[in-house]
Image 1 (cartoon, rainbow, N blue to C red):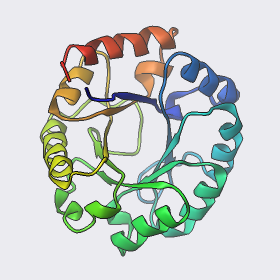
Image 2: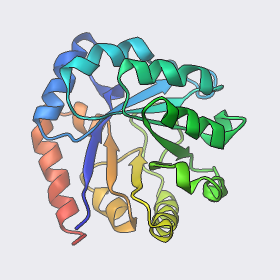
Image 3: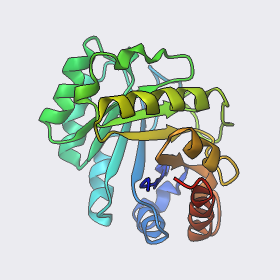
Image 4: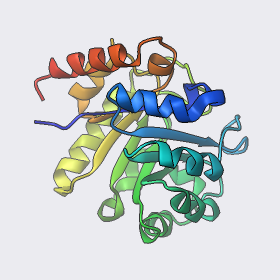
Amino acid sequence: MTTFRIAPSILSADFARLGEEVRNVVAAGADIIHFDVMDNHYVPNLTIGPLVCQAIRPHVQVPIDVHLMVKPVDRIIPDFAKAGANIITFHPEASEHIDRTLQLIRDNGCKAGLVFNPGTPMHYLDHVMDKIDMILIMSVNPGFGGQSFIPEALNKIAYARKKIDESGRDIMLEVDGGIKIDNIAAAAAAGADTFVAGSAIFGQPDYKGVIDAMREQLATTGK
């Protein structure tokens, strides 16, 4: 059976009470905290940095999954590792030397991953599968929360699943963007096992009700 993981994105949380928000969403059944970092350069928005990661680290025991939407990317990686990140993913377009950046993340004690935008080709995986612990497929264009799921992402998820299966390695396949109760099963059927959801969870009054409903949909896939 596939191990499915729900990863609420704190981009949609109430930042005035962020510690309480992450505690509540983990109590509601979240497996991972997804941490979106935007630099107003690689993407047209500005969010949060290592100090916020350090601030929420004592509030939860689950992994913190840091998605770096920044360019250049290498300089900030050790800061997030020191701040308590467990997984760090980045976009291949943001690194001059992808293999080196993946190794830098691992050298700092974190799991490493690559992120693929809707228009990013998947060939970046070809020579670095041995250094990857996570593949993240963006089902929206990065930069803003609350966008609608792009269906073409299902084909990219299926392609990534094939690459993972062929590698024989234990690599997480995450999907991020517009994930809701009514489409999470389709993403799972395509091969995803880790699901980022922002406004679909934090935008609702009952976090546990949403996460439970997502798990019910995942159970229908038979995986």
